[in-house]
Structures are given as structure tokens and as C-alpha cells.
Length: 275
Ligand SMILES: NC(=O)c1ccc[n+]([C@@H]2O[C@H](COP(=O)([O-])OP(=O)(O)OC[C@H]3O[C@@H](n4cnc5c(N)ncnc54)[C@H](OP(=O)(O)O)[C@@H]3O)[C@@H](O)[C@H]2O)c1
Image 1 (tube, rainbow, N blue to C red):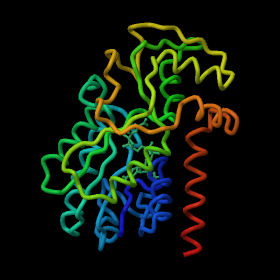
Image 2: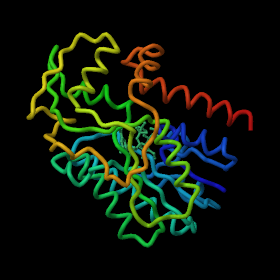
Image 3: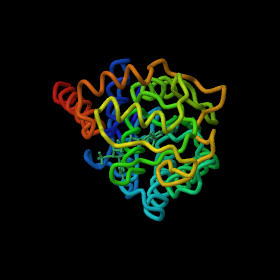
Image 4: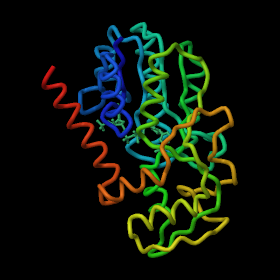
């Protein structure tokens, strides 16, 4: 089965391409680096030729209100139109649990617009809503840091390993479209302030986390259950503590996400050279 991964060089995309190939699929990584741009339409017709499935794991280069909305709207409209023209039978997209509860943020308004374009299209689809990746915890902390203090709300969060986002996405992409939304999440719930404390302690980061009900999650106030999935969500098995122990031992925290992407991209490039 030919599966095109739009955003196939990103954290999720590069590992998804690898996983789909291991499972015997013809997975193609598409992104501006390989001459495919979902915003301008460049390269889309060609890469989608003969594809059964397209998985959209792109992210916007800017998270400012207007550019992020323009990115997800334009990119999604283009993907849906080019996929319909190429006869692609399943559009899969990665979105975020609780999006409709986070609309104070321009980023989540853009993700909701992306979901709505898909739901109102004629393309067969599956929307996957994932909780926050473990790999994203550092960014959440950094965003709320002021000098040596990090103000965090005690809201609940149920984060998951990016690896398990990849496995779930591969499974969903190789099954028929559900024309609806599937939620995925981690095995445990934490309070955001406590999660931040554990992350900083594991990385010997001296910043102090202050519990503040008005503290912010990526710039916005969140209610207690805004970030947690439904009881019907499919849950991963990797525990935060296990991931944390490995990641803190192996990689300096500042390079966590970049290293994960670089490793998967190198492996993908060597695979492409070999085939
Ligand atoms: N972070 C979280 O905790 C979380 C939770 C749930 C869901 N999600 C969702 O997961 C998705 C993927 O996130 P990620 O962290 O894997 O993203 P990422 O590492 O930032 O990767 C973004 C990808 O998008 C590609 N891209 C950017 N502009 C493009 C364009 N014009 N045309 C085609 N591709 C383009 C990039 O290609 P280049 O490398 O060529 O620039 C890259 O491959 C996002 O949509 C996000 O909303 C994230």
C-alpha cells in the first residue's frame, strides 16, 4: 500500500515513515525538503499518484494567530483537493485532544479549522486527536518560564510517548477510514505543575515550579480537565518515568526534540540511498 506522509521529516512524520516501511508498506516522506509543499501545492499531484492513504502530520512554521490559521487552512484545502483528484481513499490527520476547549489560543483555533475542513469535505477521513507528547513537556515548561520561576496550573494532563503516537497513527492509517475522530493518550494522568517538577528534576534543571491556578499552558488558562481525553481513548503503555529516565540519561534536554528528528531522518535517508 502506498502511503504518503505529508510532514514526513518531522518528529512524528519521520518515525511514522520508518514504522510503515518496517510493516511492508510503500511509505513516502513528503515535505518542503523533498520538494512537496502543501501550502503552495508544489509537488502534491506527483507524490499522491497511486497513493491509497495520505497522512497529514505537518506543523506550521509560525504559531502566531494569523500565520498558523493561514497555514492549516491553506494546507488542508490543498491536500483534500489534490487527494480527491488523485483518488486517495483515506485522509488521516493528527490533531490534539481538547482542541475545542483551548480556543483562547490561535494555534488551537487553527487546528479546529483544520478538523472542520476535513469533516465538511467529501474525502474519507480519520482525525486522530493525541494528548501532549512527552517530548513536548520541555516546550510547555519553557513557555511558562520567567527567569528561574515557572508558573504552572494544577490542571490534569495525560501525556504520551511520541513513539506510541507513531504506532497508533500507523495502525489507523492502514485500516479503513472511520469518518470520525479517534482519541489517543498516555496511560497516566498528572497535574501539570507536578509533571513540570518531575521533568526539571530529572534534567537537574534548577528552575522552580510554582503552582498557580492562573498559570498558563502554552500561553492560555486551562480548566482542570481541558487536556484529558475521553474514557474511550486508546491508551499507550509507556510511562512518563520510564521515558524520562531514558531521555535524561541519553540526551541533554535542550536537544530532545531535535535529536529525535535528526536520528529518524538520518535513518530514513540511508534507507532511501539503499533502495
Ligand atoms: N506536540 C504535541 O504534543 C502534539 C500533540 C498532539 C498533536 N500534535 C500534532 O502533531 C502534528 C505533528 O507534530 P510534530 O511535532 O511531528 O511536527 P514537527 O516535528 O514540527 O514537523 C512538522 C513537519 O511539517 C512539515 N511542513 C512544514 N511546512 C510544510 C509545508 N508547507 N508543506 C508540507 N510539509 C510542511 C515539516 O517539513 P520540513 O522538515 O521540510 O520543514 C515537518 O516535516 C502537528 O500537526 C501537531 O498539531 C502535536
